[in-house]
Image (spheres, one colour):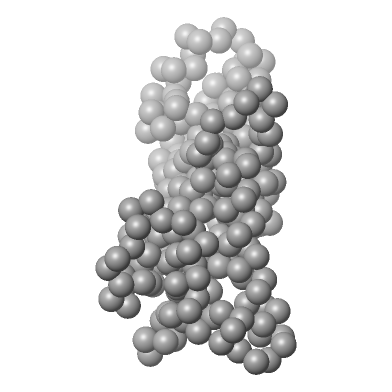
Length: 247
């Protein structure tokens, strides 16, 4: 089942139980559906605390029954509380690249890289500033991972992303100067522009620096752009390193 199916069913379980329409099938299926939703890191970040606490529908009833006396109030509470989760589930199909990048990153023995990617996904909708910061961290982690595997040990504790990328690109034969074909120069120049752009975006819109009164606040779409660009670039770098090593 898809995330939207699971979220819809989860919402139905809560509505049914809170309005006296629950049944044995709901009781039996609820733990499985709830766990599937919480296993999705982005969904878990948007799930209300009571969803995480209520492991069965009896516990949910103990929570909702004294909180609101009427069915209408309970329904409204559930719809409002789950609205962000429903929005995420409805938009889930518009992010097919998430699963592709996640699956590819799982092939590499680099837990810190996978953690950075998962954090970026989790924060994309709820914490755009944090997501943009982690998108840059992802690329720093990928570059350092590749350089360290190649034997580089003299890496700055607080590296400049552009410098790290230039070192990594040179190692992987991905600089414009290392190619003569115009199309390759254009593509590789685009990769460099992405790195420079992400660094500038992070400095301008992320939570990495303090802001004045007129500071610009990023929207989720800005975070989505940063995370998607970082994920695609990270995947390309790691795949190139894998090919270079003959894996």
